[in-house]
Length: 212
Image (cartoon, rainbow, N blue to C red; front, side, top):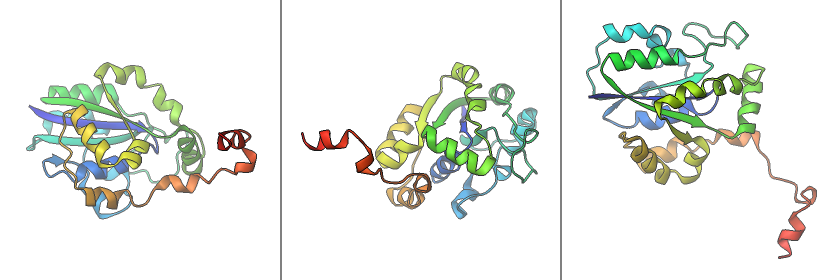
């Protein structure tokens, strides 16, 4: 049976990053264009048209055994390239998309991406002028029915190949990226723009801990 891995999470949680990791796997048909650049719009994601119209599953040919698709929640619809406003924030058609994929003969794997809560807030405010994570949280009751595996962008940066191998095992999905390719993908940590060292003089507990 053909397998489709669906990755989703709040806007800014790491869809592009994880798509790059999966696109390095020869047996998986994914967002390979990402490997040529740092960032491109979701409009170029291979399943973009099917997210807009899930019924296209029934008229599309899928010659490979493994596929991966990635979408953030909310997302910018194909053809719209501007900052989100209320009319531009679109919730993916999760139920319709997943059900149509099953009807097309896919075995569905679902991965929910997580990232540090504060970094998500900073990133969304910077790029979207508002915090959008609650709109994804509202979808969790629906998504949990599909027995998802939660994957962490923070743990990917921390444990690297060890984490990738474990995620491949948990998902029962091939992730065959080399250590060198993974290190190249992770070399620019986008978290750094949002964090700074703590001022030890302002952290009241530090002198107690250091004295032990």
